[in-house]
Image 1 (cartoon, rainbow, N blue to C red):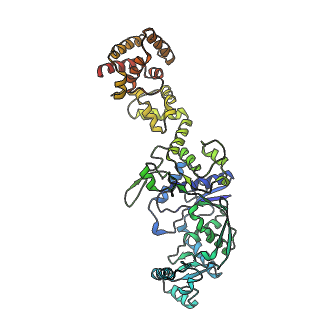
Image 2: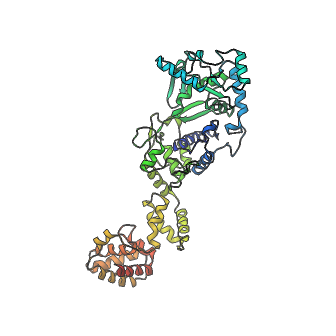
Length: 501
């Protein structure tokens, strides 16, 4: 089994394109097959500088690896279409010689006049086909000598497919089943231009055949191209691969295809990594820079249109490979859910080894000239890990362990700081100063017993103590905080609080 991802470098890679790459990768690896990256850059007018490198970097970050590509090479190189001109020229001549393609010399103005005429006549045919070609400048209306002369004189031309008349096609799609089309509804597609480059249709078919592609998984927007592609395989006498057309990724409200504008308006990325437009210098946000893990993004994308049929939702890449079946991809559009994407990131963060996160925490604080031990780093990560969505949240949620609060939450202060509070805090300082074993368990037992002995409500002391230690009344278990902050720093923070409030 051989599958490929063949993007065009016309801009940043949308997450819809990433999902296409992912599904191809999963199916290939599930069946011990090969996965190929091919760059389809025949449309030089739309080529965008930097887009090719962007595609490669984005897929590398996501962990979608290729067996053959423009970087790795392979037995079917080159893997960039602009470097395969001679191959396409050879194959277009085959189609011309066997009568499946023909030259057309119509100018843009002549084509527009044809369309206007058809619209005025309210003709059921509105395109270039076996009916309208008889009134145009092409191999059917010109002599062989005229065609040769035009080509020799450098007159611009295209090569069109000779679409058969009134032929019923029964096409197969893995996801959608049988697709029935009559060729009378189709136009004579342009396959080749006089600039020496093919259109998508010809290059795509020739490359897939020569690279021995067995399955083509692509977006739903390519479904209308399925008939011409099947007919091209037939014209060359080749066996067509199996096709599967993925459902659209829809806006969060389910109405229409997800776009960059939706992300800008609703506040979420639609690209895997940041993209800076080389012409406008405008930046489009990416999941990597927003703090999402590649594992979470891959997991989220896999569930846009596919479901394993079980209750499990959180998968690593190997689990996705093992579970993936193309037959379980849905036909209908898949609604994008930004909040679900955050949920996936939260789940993958929770599954990340605590020691790895602790090391990152140590490095983060080292950059701020704060030294923390590995033991304490592991402890604080364990305390806050369940509450974090992004790695950056871990730093925010743990900062009070290592940095004394500079201010106190005004609402918490108003609610918990009463007339008798300063005296209670002074008594607490005196009591805590005399405790040698500052472990969480011992502190909790002795401090609470002492408060009960004073016949004071727990909240009257515990809430103000927490407020002075962390600046707020929320957070992990208070006595875990006391243990990690340490006796000396706890006493300092309580005294500072008394002076500052």
